Image (cartoon, helix red, strand yellow):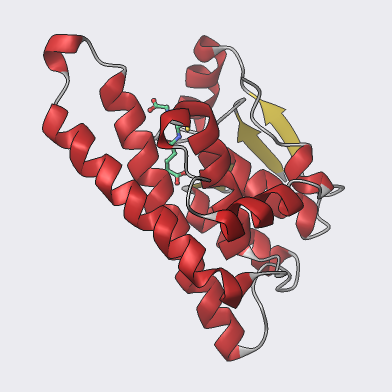
Length: 200
Ligand SMILES: N[C@@H](CCC(=O)N[C@@H](CS)C(=O)NCC(=O)O)C(=O)O
């Protein structure tokens, strides 16, 4: 398998951490499409999206969308990325949903903030900032349910919070959320998280 990614993409970091945590590192070649031109050409040769991450399977199928790729990697690893227990699996999905919501919201706001001043929508920026705040609060509240677990819920949470540190440092998400802050520092000790940390 080949995983196409680019530097600090939080969407690509999600499968990159998953590959390491699921013991698939020897089976997946990671291809860093650092050059924007090369990235566009390579991705468009294989599909319509031109976004990372994308996974080329051993059978030659080109999978896009990080949630689909996570599902595929879970199957490829014999189910290492979600708990087997039904109740715990539900919690993993609940956390993954909130962390995905946060990632989309942070990403959208970051793009909006980088548009020319005349093109920005202050209303959109405010709406997404409020949504992100609610998601940070929910991840703090849910923490007792996923503390100490490594699954796609906790992996996606690390990807989203790491992206917040890079693009939305002003959110100061640790402030008032001490359990989430301590949990994040602990998770960052894991090789899968440390090796894929955004560089900024
Ligand atoms: N919904 C997609 C989002 C992926 C995405 O937006 N990736 C960004 C990098 S973080 C990208 O490749 N953007 C290129 C573009 O918008 O042309 C997923 O979950 O994989």
